[in-house]
Length: 311
Image (cartoon, rainbow, N blue to C red; front, side):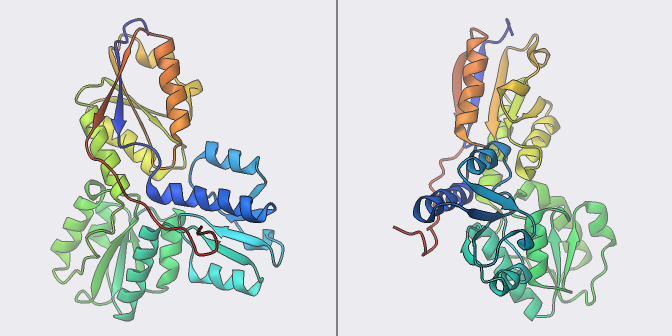
């Protein structure tokens, strides 16, 4: 890394308001009630966060059968289906809901479109836990559309009764081509509210687009199961930069930076700033590089805590 002259940080990066809220909910629940505390799915898609909370006495589960009856359970930021909520009630679980409010908004619109007997094209990744939860809000009405090719093939019950929703961790850029195909095929297509796309997803991708104008290599801090982190890598690569997803500085291959003068650093919406700081310190400590920052937008979004934990 002898040639490295500048480390450029993207802003905004890292935790979004929904992730901050979800983690705060778990920490406050531990403080107020103590362990054991169960969480349905990883609270957010980041291994560093999950391992830290496990060390504090949190158990992450995929099936509610793993939770003792009457125990305290937190729903993750990704949301759950009504069937999961009903199962939790049957098992007399004390539930605290950490679902991101933007995901809840999509759930509400799914129910509204279903009540209108519309076929709902849900743009997203079929296996993603958020998509699974949204599908559960409107059984029989949702068709997941993940690619332009799928948008060209999909056939609704009634072409005049169609609507679309999107997975919140996709940006406007991610969904634009799919939406254009659907609009062309189905002129009656009803759109969701304009704010359904997660502001954080769009902002972080916009920041990466600015980053690659100056950086030859982009390092994205995030976990492999983080949809928005993987998209940051794809966005950087699509604009000509070499890009790599890492969970910490320990995963950096020095060969990536051979002959590189400027490296860009960002983080997915579920990646802690502490990990970013460690990575930047490692880069600076192994080079003569100066540290700078590019800010494309200032974020000031926050979400209230559930009533059980509000102070």
